[in-house]
Length: 523
Image (cartoon, rainbow, N blue to C red; front, side, top):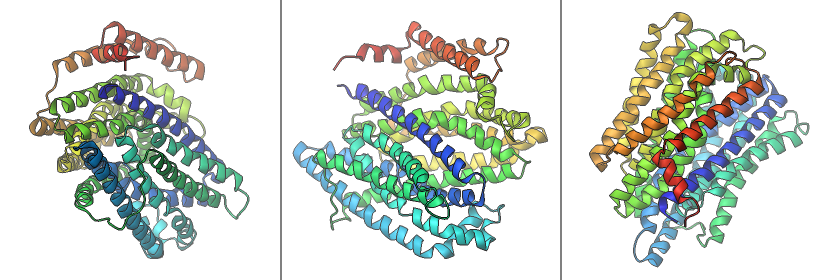
């Protein structure tokens, strides 16, 4: 099977599994809302679960894979193959052991220092809530937060296992394990809801069991593949040192993103009542696309790019990069157009009940207009950034992300004044739009400068065809009653739009689609 066909298959598997995970994640949220409502216990659960997840986003999962996978792929691609496989095993074992020791020490220290650290962390993360100065809230928060932090150990080890499996072209199980996490939280949360003074404890046990399964099942599959990750005392090697040097700037880049999000939220909170929630809901709609398709494609393309970079196959890497951008465009461009024209009725169907009134709908949709137009550059950048990681040029990604973040922060303060006061939050969304296109432009320029990446003429032609196909379903949303949030008419319009788009990209012979159809069934 060709590498590009394998890449597209891996992306499809990742997308399907991630979509299932999102469904179970929604079920998890429904359960926690049922059990905790909007009580103080709900605030404790949200904060206790948020803190280890914040560390996870900063230090584990995608950040760790970006540093680990390129070195592993390069090692596996060495000669002779048998010795390369042995060197790769030794490196993976050393990395696994180093992460096990480091994560255990970090988590243990955090658990011990929790009573001292927690008030400070709360003041930084929630400056307007006063949570950091509420003794009763702090006293109730410490134990569940301590209980949940070992999850960080499991998820860090799972990230190493996932990196190895992905490099070996195994994507199904790593993509499935987040579903297990949600199933465990739902199962234990519901089963143990009445066993203690609060349902929180059942939810916490579910997180720990789910995190352990995420790690253990992948570890078992590696054992079956003859690639055991058994701990070793020889942890600090030249290759683990190289991975650590790549990991540090990647963590810094992730930190910039988190700080950027906090600044945007802080600015929105101070604009007017409901501004931050409108932006949050709008972002959730964008993340439905980015979290499923963009994550799937960018995750599955990294091992491929890393293998090609290790072989110094510049032509193959260039081909794979544009194949990834093409696949991303096929999904995100029509999604952006779809959110622009159908956003209001979709938002109304999803959210408009209770306190979410017409004003809430207007605020959220007005932000979604700008966020939708940022969907394409954000998804494109996620592909381009993987080429920097594959080439071990992490500093490029850090620099362009930092520049874009500074522009976004400045825009958050400047752009709201361009809008009426009751729509000032659109300025924050506009800052996201401007910084996203800047981020992609800078990344493309750097890829051109360092890797001689060229914008193919075929890509422009196909992008024009995809844009035309996406615009072709717009009239469906301009007919009378198109703003009706009733489920059946809305679903019919959505299905009709997808059919129109799908038929047209085949009829117009978009080359990316033609190649996929031609390769189907071929080895």
